[in-house]
Image (cartoon, rainbow, N blue to C red; front, side, top):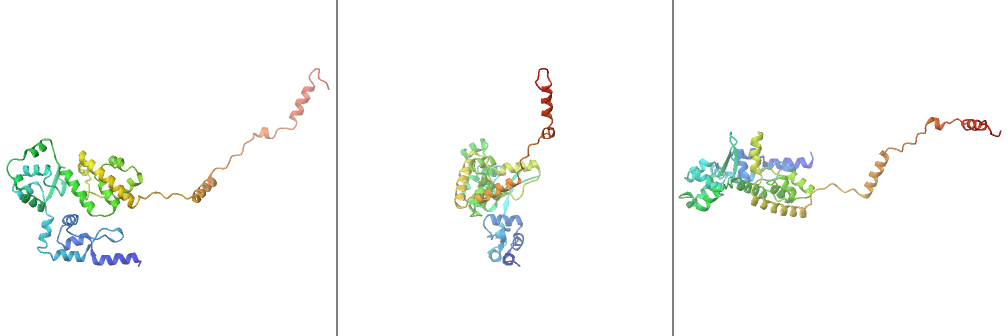
Length: 314
């Protein structure tokens, strides 16, 4: 057994895989993933670049916390528009207006069978919003908000992207991974305008994180999701462009993107020598056989014919 195998085996004995950890914490896998993203569950990096794992000590900490497991489940409980409106004792229409104007931020979304986007919100955050802004839950909608709604304002996708990006940035300290996370919310043309070096763009593509767990296979549903993943407001695009430029600059200073190794002079000479050995040899000039083997009697015959002409001297 190699030292690497020994290290991996030791890590496996003191940690749990995500699926096993979710079972120990009495959470669904989606609830567990959300708890990790929100920082409620601490994870450790997997051995040799494998998936993250959870220490037994972290499991014990959470299981002995007050109110387990209901308290932990409540922290990751999500609700849709109808249930969220019931939680705040307002109409679904009013809840939608608050969400479109950015007062409440989605934590997730999914597509229903009609390929319509269904936004989900943290129940815990909605209750906190209700306590902090009771005036927005009753009476007429303020004129400023009415103007935004009349102009077609909808900040749900933009706020979700910003929130998801924040989770990704908090999950890593690697400068190139952070830059790749920012690039993930921009289209390829915009990234190429900001990051002109092709090797740096290749590095960003390799490290690009997934904003959603899985993309739908249906082309129409896939197109809907793709629109939600990319920044579409001018202010949002500008913000991410500036941040991407700064992040790539910091990553470049920390560790330049990998490039093909430059060939040394000796290796270049060897390469040229190899090319010369493989080059086709010069083709010798081909001489027509009649010209190469001309008869030695040809010139004598011509001379005798000239001597026989009338008036010629013998």
